[in-house]
Image 1 (cartoon, rainbow, N blue to C red):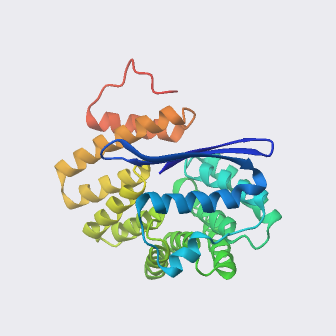
Image 2 (tube, one colour; image 1 turned 45 degrees about the horizontal axis):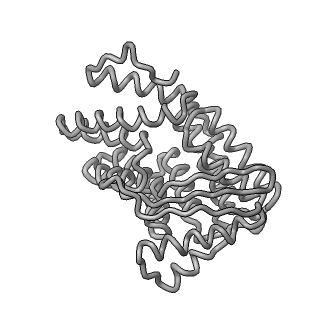
Length: 288
């Protein structure tokens, strides 16, 4: 699924499409217009139309999840969406920006579980990607547990808790939280990715490979998962599969830097993998 949201003052324009990635064919598309306060009604409408387009039959519990609202505050919801978009670019500036936006959402709704979960995940990624401060993991644990206090059925909260436990090398707790995240939301690509990292850490790389492949099926544009998959193949001695994975990373990164030309981290990884693959990137415009 792909989409875009355009906001001008209180006016929203939301475009959504379902795409068959393998066939490169559009399955369904629709555009919605409304006010900011209409965002929750639009969200429910989009979800129901996607279910109808895919001809999926929902269980009673899935129908409840479909209409569940994590907050009634439209402005807080807007901050949350902007924070999530920033977070998964994974640069230090973007993660700090996400933290600020999640905090703004919480100020508007002090019981906003999804925003607390986002804060927990943000602190965990600051620890993993940039600075191994134990205080980041402590803050990740605190925010994740607060999210679960407000909503014990929130998959994202279990994911952020799993990441925090993983950082503290509490692998059993990390694994339990990661599995729970997937039970609550089988489409949670971050949870599969996290389990892949846990399996790799405890030398179960065959299991790690399956988790990363599942994560990539759910989100083919997450270049970090391809990088982790490459490490798993290297550890398993799967030279050809690792080579193919590096080629996939390069393709994903090249698309990423076109969308986000100011993402220095992605440019750095792009250069590293181009070098590893023996390609010469001179003369090519990589967007930065």
